[in-house]
Image 1 (cartoon, helix red, strand yellow):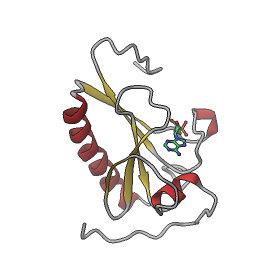
Image 2 (tube, helix red, strand yellow; image 1 turned 60 degrees about the horizontal axis):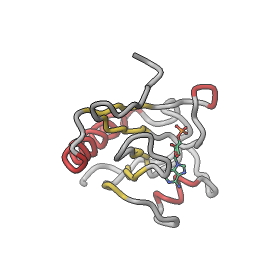
Image 3 (cartoon, protein in one colour; image 1 turned 60 degrees about the vertical axis):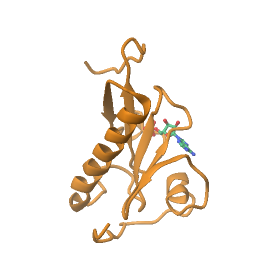
Image 4 (cartoon, rainbow, N blue to C red; image 1 turned 90 degrees about the vertical axis):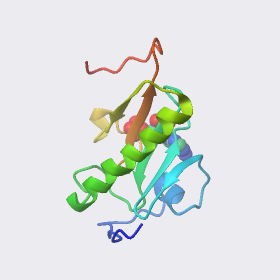
Length: 127
Ligand code: AMP
């Protein structure tokens, strides 16, 4: 809202997250603003697992302009407040996989937001 629209370095007509961002394929939306969309992951690792995704195509966080970093985290924060309340979660993890070797499957930058619950059994590799 009121934020300047950021131009992507490159577009990708076939990218599934670009299509979701353009509203061409459906998603279960959590929230949306000028530059980002947040929607539930189709394969949730915890209840309420969602993805924070820029509407423009950037492969990894290294391709995304730094001017968007603040809004990326602000959007994650807004989604976290919403999900903590709606799912009565007690905490959450934010995860960003960059490049295939680090587990990135979809080549369009996205941050995983995973609400956490006592004894949810989810194991994150770090920690
Ligand atoms: P990553 O391994 O970090 O690239 O994660 C990609 C994530 O995108 C996975 O958790 C998938 O379950 C999720 N995903 C793939 N396609 C869709 C889709 N159409 N809608 C929602 N989530 C998706």
